[in-house]
Image (cartoon, rainbow, N blue to C red; front, side):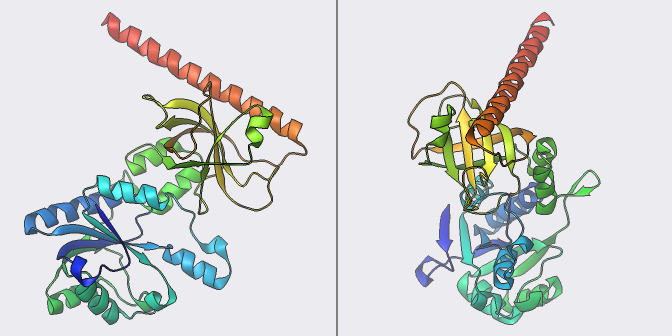
Length: 327
């Protein structure tokens, strides 16, 4: 999959079947849309393309207003989003820098400069509530008219439902915020995870007796707290672990978000390795403690809970295997 930061240059442009959106989390609704784009591209002999934005438009406007609380928390980092798009058969992704000049484009300018001249769009799919251009003045009807004028086909995808509920990034964020990983998985179509490269930290966990793998989280995540997790990428099988995702209020007042993972019974140098941390169960919210001994005691309790969780899973698995063997 080719990834472009901004519109491709003239030599790299190619006729494409395109969809546009933030694609935070790449949930089942997104996957249905991407599948349709992939099928159309194959049928028309085009490349399947996605235009997405960095930062999220609502993040941009929240920062402009000086109130980042108005920005939606992120389900996925850019690396995980791009991997999901690739997994869904997309050939090229345009990561458009969402800026004041871009936000000021009128619907007409967006159509001409971005869709027609910049991307050579021949087929376009959007959600049925899609809006575009300055002040979100463009709508699906205007896009249909533009397609007829400039020679590209436009389709809309109805809302994808999970039972009686709409599948949306907002619904995924709500499930993650509540620690409801079963519901999140039902919306995403896969277990929730965060990937990244292991970085150097303050080495405090090692001092406390709980060495951790540290992953930088550049944006405000959709969840925080202490979690039971398993880590992929360090061994053939996922490794059991306990993790803290948050701002570490007891030891750091910078507000920087970090994912710290203590892998049980594991002692290897992992700096620079890319791992995927899969979230299984929320233990509790993040807390600020009066001193390091109190923090250490809390971590110890969390580790005991996590170990018991994995012991129970093994017991249930072995019981299910025994029952199967009897059949």
